[in-house]
Length: 384
Image 1: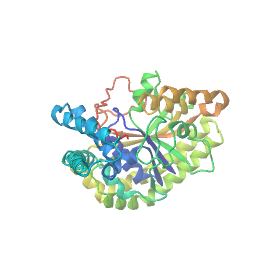
Image 2: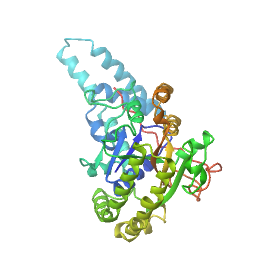
Image 3: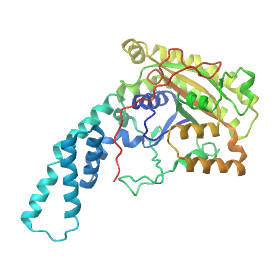
Image 4: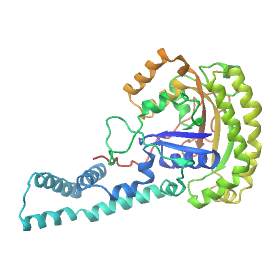
C-alpha cells in the first residue's frame, strides 16, 4: 500500500510537519510517494549549487529583499543590471571581460552564505536527511508543478496537480494508494461547515461526510538519522505488513464502489484489528523509545478514515496548492464522472508542531474551537 503526500511550498504547512509526515509514512507503509516540490527541499543544496549566474542573482535579490537588507540588495541589483547589459555584448575586450567576471565572482561569498542559511534551516527539521532513504519502489519523489512555474530542469517530466488529483482512485491496476494529509485538513473541513465523525457514528455511512479513527502513535521523528529510520522501518515490518495488506484489501472496496457500510465493516473488522500489534512494535522499538524519552513525550498521531474526494480538492485549494482554475477543472469532472464524488481512504498525520491545543483531533466532532498555527519559516522560491 502506497502513501501519497502532495505538497507544494506555501506559507501554511511547516517544514517540520512535512518531514514528520514523510517519516511516519515511511516507517509504516509499504511505500511512499512525496509528490510535488518536496524534491526541491530535500535536494535544495544540490540544486542551488548548479544554478546559473542569472538564477543566483535572482535568488539573492529575493532573499535580501525579503530581509530588507538594503546594502547587499543594492549591490546585487547593480550586478544584475550589469549582467543583463553585458549579455547583449557579443565581443568584449579581454580586460573588460576579466573585470566583468571578477564582478560576477564577488557574489560568491553572499551566495555561499545563502546556501548555508538554507542548509541550516532544512537541517533543523530533518528534510535533507531524507535523501538517504530514497529508494526505488519504497520512497519516490514525483515532480508536480503548476503550469505557470518554471524549474531548473526543464526536460524533467512533471505531473500537474490536476492530473494527480483527478486520478487519485482512477486505476485499480496501479498500486493502491492512501492520501496522507496534515491535520490542518480539519481546519479546511471546518471552513466548509463539515464535521469529523468516528466510524461507529451513524453519520459515517453518509458518503458526503468525513470519518477518522485514531490508530497509531509515534514519538517525534524529525531528529532521526537516515540509518535509524531504516532500522526502525525494518523492525516494524513484521507487524506493519499485515496492516498494509488489510489497507490494500480495503482499497478494493473503493475501486468497486462497494457501499459505505461494507467499507466501514471491513475497516472495523480487518484494518483496526491489526493496529494493536503495530502499536506494540512501535512501543517496544529501542530507537523509538529513546525518541519518546528525549522529546518531552511529543507524539505524532496517525488517523485513518474516509473523506469525499471534493473535500480533498477543497483542502488543497485552501492550502494554496491548487488555484481556482485547477479546482474548477476538477469540479467540472464531477458532471461526467460521478464516481469522483465518492470518498477515498485518507491518513491524517497529526503532529504537535501544527496544533496549539493538547486535545488533538476529536473522534466525535469537528475541531470548531481549536486554533491552528500556520506560521512557517519562509523558504525562498527558486525560479529561473
